[in-house]
Structure formats: C-alpha cells, structure tokens
Figure 1 (cartoon, rainbow, N blue to C red):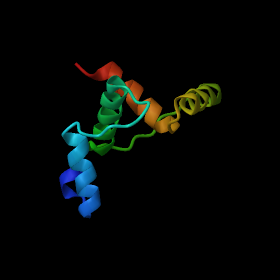
Figure 2 (cartoon, rainbow, N blue to C red; figure 1 turned 45 degrees about the vertical axis):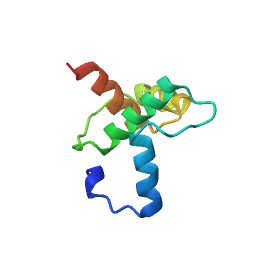
Figure 3 (cartoon, rainbow, N blue to C red; figure 1 turned 120 degrees about the vertical axis):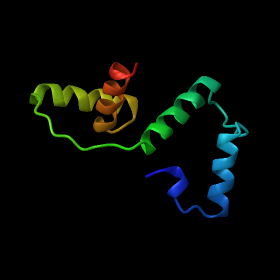
Length: 88
C-alpha cells in the first residue's frame, strides 16, 4: 500500500511531515541510522509479491537467529538481503 493511500490522522500527518522534512530529532540515533531507517520504512511500503521457497531447516534456523540479532522478522531479513543483491 502506498503511503499516499493511507488514512492518517492529524498527528500522524505531522509526524510524517517531520520525518520527510528531516526535522525529527531522536536522541541517540545518528543521521546515517536515521537514513537507514527511512530506507527500510520506504521499502516496507513498496509493492511486494508473495513467493514460496524451500530451504533447509538448518539454513532457516540460522536466518531466524541472524534476524533476531538484527531485531527484525526473518522474512524481512531475507527480503532485504535479496534486495541488496539484486538492485542495480
């Protein structure tokens, strides 16, 4: 779903505007981290398709462990990794 199609209340719109205008200040977060979070948020809203793949149980356990270390769902880690490897 596009961010433009979301129904945001007044407070949500103000937050979105602040983020888009780089006027949000979060303690303890560097600009590079904020840029990465923005990129992740934008990719989260990008159009996606569902696929099915078969992988070994061992690989899945390792992926889930890696995702937990990064603080994200394992599906997000997989999609992010594929995105990084396929963008041109």
